[in-house]
Length: 496
Image (cartoon, one colour):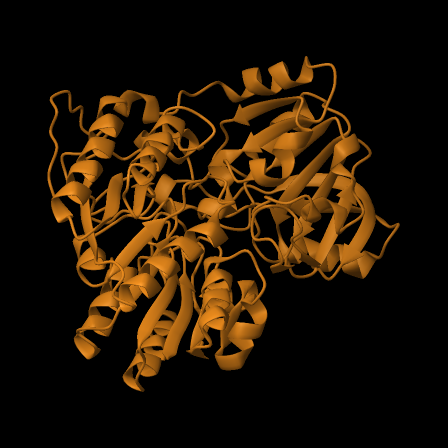
């Protein structure tokens, strides 16, 4: 048996000014052939699960590409072609099945439905090929994606700590189907609901109940059931919440389960909206908390959703209110890192930190923050994730430095990286367990590595292209009407 196992992942924020060229994939991790297998075998990723299943059955494996980039703007045509063409070439050479680790919210310069376009092209080459797909919980599911694969599934956790398990689940469904043991059929639907990412944490309501419903459907006999929160910052027609279920031969059963899941989501639509708080008030609340660590979430500049990671709004307010014993992860500013490296460890330096990128989609220019401090640490920025999310994956933040103002230690990086693992601090000599405040440019993924440390968590409404304020964003391509851009009170429920 010959299997094509591949990974092509990007969560596209169409409002982000950060370019997603091929270099951006290389910076996070882009590998071809045997190198792709070596990079991800043994990791807690869907592709790692696929490779384990292939070993179990003694299959020959082709790994044409394994590539991922941190969320940012639309994927450049060249980058999309390099990845998708590698997969298509492997299928063209002949295989018995394809197991694909995708995201589900990739918008490229050449297609608004990056995954659907890839799957459609594979299906045109091999009309009967069994195809298994894993997607992120934030996938914007499309009809093209569903029509052109055999079995599609998504994560049930946010932070995404079940990636391996989900990959193994859908891989086993496909292998059982190839043996003739089962006949997987899918039913899916969506609702006109742009849920906000801050309201999708699966430990919180309303997502917790929806995930429990999906698990109950699986215990009741479905092969798989997935609720997708969607990615609302990808301004494309199919953005929003959806559900997909897989049954053994009974499509009506799968469809009915998907409808039940989306009916429940629609009834709770108001709960998927984030309620804002004045920034100064939020920081003042944090200051009044006696013991730490207190987590301060700079969510509007979350690079894990496409933020520039160099907006200084929240850090400026933290400094204005005089918070002490703060560690910040992380500010993207390659120029500042170079300046600190030139000055050397121990040197005192004044920097215009951050504010290097303008954000025309929200009408904001970059505003650097003048900061004086001592260069505490210089690093190559490389470390291995040991926490429960992306376990075993090598992180490369690029040349990295720590600026210590006396009250605040700021991790400054040359490559974007969301802080979901304590390694962002420990790799540069900071022990986050003993800080009073941890200022993180994150939304929900921080929970994977930092929730066990937190005495309290404060959401800070700063500026950035990952804002939860829909009034700041100009949606042009999403299907309308859609809640909450349009106030839909009747049960308007378009079927797939």
